[in-house]
Amino acid sequence: MTSDTALSVVFGDKISDEINDRVNSLADSLKKSGIKGITELCPSYCSLTISYEPDIISVNRLKRKINGILRKEMSVRSEDSVLWEIPVCYGGKYGEDLDDTAKLLGITPQELIKRHSQTVYKIYMLGFLPGFAYLGGMDSSIAAPRLSSPRKRIPAGSVGIGGQQTGIYPMSSPGGWRLIGTTPVDVYNLKREEPILYSAGDYLRFIPVSEEEFESIKLQIESGTYTYKSDEAVRK
Amino acid sequence: MIEILRAGPLMTIQDGGRKGFADKGVSQSGVLDNRSMNIVNILLGNRKDEAVIEMTMAGGDFEFQNETFFALGGADMGAQLNGAECRLYTVYRADKGDKLTMGYAQKGCHGYIGFSGGIDVPVVMGSKSTNIRCGFGGFEGRKLAAGDVVSTGAPVSGITDNSYSPETENTDEIRVLLCAQNYMFTQKGIDDFLSCEYAVSANYDRMGCRLEGTAVEAVNGMDIISDAIAFGAIQISSDGMPIVMLADRQTIGGYAKIGAVISTDIPAFVQHKPGEKIHFRAVTLKEAHKLYRKEQKFLRKLSEKCQKGR
Image (cartoon, rainbow over all chains, first blue to last red; front, side):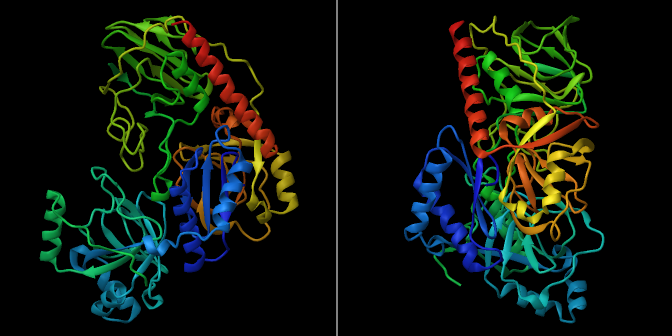
């Protein structure tokens, strides 16, 4: 029980692909089920929180419906998953902390870019800001502590490392992550039919691009001609 | 249309909230006191979760630019229409040039003004609510300021005689549902939480309300693997103080939750000003749902009564 209008299905107590897959599978199955009275589905690392209207569906009926889905073969989330290719221009004015972070880690900036961009990341959940993805799978050798004094304003599209995590700032925000690059891709865009580009359960890969490519993609996005690179049903 | 001549400290356009986007990390937003919004809208012939202006701690001054029907709800801010006192939950007619003036909240914390025909602002992700932190929704994604002109919809006919007299209730007892994460707290912690008085602190905004009182004892720290936060969820911060999470809360958080204020008691809770005291009482889910259905029934009845007048 989470509140009188929300209940949570808890699948485990650690951050793992297997547990998170089940969370997102149940979210998908419930979305497809069209059960009346469900107002919101909020997946997180280990649990799915389901908001409902108690006068439309009783808690017991909702629980029966959920158990029914859990008993049946749940749709395998990764079959519907999308792999998003996110172009990133690393270093320089696009990633002010790249050189310092590489130095701190005792590797070259090129090596840091390589290790950051060779991984396929899993989107465990979205939160903190609209479209902010909590990614799993970062190479632990490039983990770096947050900045001691956070920046007041980090521009939208910044790609950073904060502790064991990496991610993209979907909109400008204060923040303490080390900025290593910027993507021209608008993860969050209110003018788009789907304002948030990706969903929990999807995968993401960073593709290093040059300054020229960055500016060219930015123009394509502004003029609405950019094709968001994605591949359906790509497994790790 | 209505022009803001003078804005209170925090006036935003809010409706029943942005629902269905929590999985994308988008906060719910919406009014803090749903009940006041619902009643105001029903009196005005609107959908019960239509957008209203929410005013925290103090109201503003307004000038009407055309014939408008409005009603006030929530905190009493001593509103006057051209110098004549306005009661809460009563439909008033204003003409071009009429002035509505307000002061500090005398009783309650958040006041509401609704307009028959609603407020005409773009719907962003299914809602007219302002998300100030992210700068979208409502009026240009920000709080209202002097000089802003807010468009109101076409008034609904036959609503002029609508009014409602709220019953006075003891609102210092806030009912809560203890939640599954309460294993994180010691029995003493839970007992203290349910028996001690807590004061609303000055650390109170649309995201959450921090309380001050007896620290709630945890078994072993407050950190959990981040999960969803419900409206009214009570997080315990690292120093043991409860924080009631409200409309603008983030979708996900990493503090343990001892329980949640039941949805029908959130309106009473949020109307407490900093310094005012409350205490919690645990109820069962069954009781909470009974109260929920009773509230829905009350709103349906009020709606039927208001429609009969038409």
